[in-house]
Structures are given as C-alpha cells and as structure tokens.
Length: 439
Image (cartoon, rainbow, N blue to C red; front, side, top):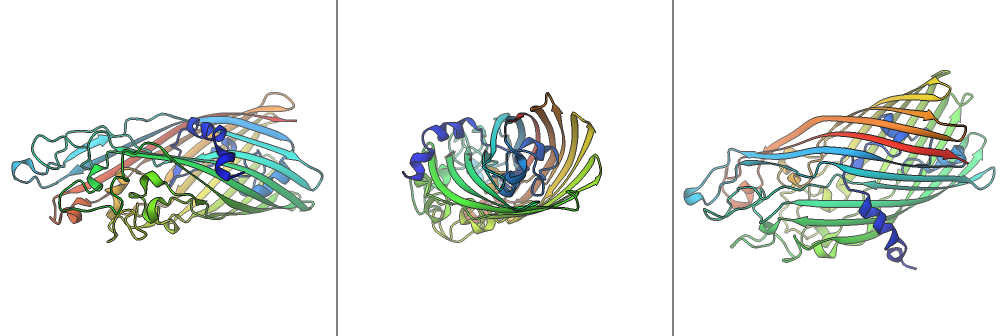
C-alpha cells in the first residue's frame, strides 16, 4: 500500500481540521505537547507525556501507558506595510498602503499515545502539525498597471495569501538498553496541503516581464497535496538518582512529493520538503519540587530550496535556482521551569528565543509568510483530577517583531525606489488545554 493511500483520506481529514498556523520558530511550533509548551518548548530531556514522536522518541521508554489529547486556540496578528513608493505619471504605479491578514484565530489539536510492550520496549504514537505559512489579505486599493485598476499588495487580483498545513503521524519504538537509558526511533509519515491566491503578477501576466518557468502553475490553482516520510532518532539518559537528564534528538529531512499545481511557484518544480532539525536538552531537578530544563534546537530551513533560496535569485520561479523565501537556518534556545506546588498541582513557566529567519532583502515575498517572531513567553499547569487522569493548561505570548527592507519591485521593474520600503510584522497569543490519562 502506498504512503498516499495510508494517509488519505482519513488522516487528511484530520489534517484539514488541524488549522495551519502555530506559534512559530520559523514555521515549526515553539513546542509540541502542552506540557512542553508551558515550559518554553523544552522536551528533549523530559519524559512527561506521549509526544515523543515530535520531541524525542526515546522518552516513550519512561512514560508508561497513557494517552494525551488537547488543543491550542492560537491568535497570530500579521500585517504588512509599504511606504515611500514612487508614483509614476497617470497612476501607473501606486503601491503604498497597509494590509492586515484577516484570519486570526485557529484551533490546533494534538494527540499522543504511549504503550509499553515489555520491560525494555515501548510503542508510541504522536500526531502533530507545523504551520506559520498562512496569510489572508484583502485586495486593497493598490494600482500596479493603469489608473483605476485595483490590485492587492503584490499586484495580483483579488485576495492575497497562502495556506500551508503539515500533518505528521509518528509511530515510534523505544528501547531501554539500561535501567535509566534509552534509544528511540520515529517514522515521520507526513501529509501537507498548500494553496495560494492573488499572485497573478508572478505568472507572466505583465508584458515584457517573465517571473515563472511554469506559467499557469503559480496561483489560484486550489488546494494541492503532497506526501512523504522521514525519521527521528533520539537518546535519553537519567543520572544521579534521576536528578539530571540528558537528551538528544535528530530528524532527517522529510522528502515530500511535489506540489504539481504550484510547480511554477516553488523552486525545483514544486518541491517543498521539511528540513532536518536537531535538539540537545538537559533537565536538572535542583530541589525536590523544582526542575529546570534547557533545550538547544536548530532547524535547517536553508537546505530546502523553495524556503531557503533568496527571493532575488536570478533564475525563474519554479527552477532549481529560482526564488524562494530566503529563510536562514534558525537556532532556538528554550528554557523551562517546573514547580510541584502540591502533590496534585504542577506549575510551569518558560521562555523561547530563536533567530529570525527572514532577511531585510527578502521582505516582499515574506508578506505571504511573516514568520518574524523571536521570543515566546509561556506559563502552564497540570492539575491531577484523580489517580489516573490530569488536566494541563498553557498560555503563550510572543511580542510583536518586524522586519523592514527595500521592495523586490525595485529589482523586478528596474526602477530604483519604485517599490519603496516594506515592513512585515507579527505578534502571537495562544491558550491551550489538554487531557491526559494513564492506564
């Protein structure tokens, strides 16, 4: 049976329900599992829920039999502004203006299951998603061709935006090879869905200006899906009477089939793989009721050409060397603190600080994907309900960040200053609740 058959249609229905935006380190979530999210995303050296497939599969060796189900209500506020553009005679170009992405509230579900097989082996299943490439701008009152023409901020017609959903189903196996040490591996079965609208200006519709190598496969093609698989491997060890834990995790690049409907937009004829990433973590129980956790995480966005190629690349859209979003690799530092306030209540706090993947030279394309937030501040709790069940809650705030740069239109039309200066901004809030039960 093919991977496509395994993931469709049932799991794709779940993907469509799992709305695409997420508190972002680039377009990865700031954490996976609500307990991790309450501690700034720290999870590599912890074994506290059934989300090892997203964090460290070795953790399943220590979790026991349980399931976790929950979700986040997530609110990203995204906007883009252009000012100082040169207006030419007869209103040929009137590009100044500001737009705010309209869709601002999302529900992000999550699910995890852990089940020991015997004293040494454990099975786990984690279902999670990535997102952050999501915008929906109204058409606006921009004029990119002649007076009276109404365009969106990137000189297309109608609404402007993109929508990316990535769903990962991660069956995992963990092997405890020593009393307090384990290895784990997860198979990352992945489905993703993408659509774009309002990018007609890049579909060779402007006379004398060619932007794409695949005319007719850039925008307004509806939803397209692709499928692929990768691996995550991990190690977790606990030392000094379990006071100190060390974890390490590495995920391979997930090779995805191409978005054939958008092979004129993404580099390498519609390729959009998920980049490799790694994480190292420490957790230290420095007092009977206090645990401090630290993760260092790196995401290699630059290895995927559709994401990492500079937007000013000399080749045409859709070609291997064609323009991308210009994202750099991101390094993230996550710090979390947990306090066992009472036998039935754990309180958490954390901070997550990452690099901004977007350079000022790539602002124009990233009007579609303004993943510029760098800092996340988190709070969380877990309240035991009875001997087997618990309720976990989290809150996250990411202050507004912005990137400003010269418009790509200066280069595209060969007139310095014609596009002015552009600024993209984002801030985020989220509130989550999850139920966990041991069995």
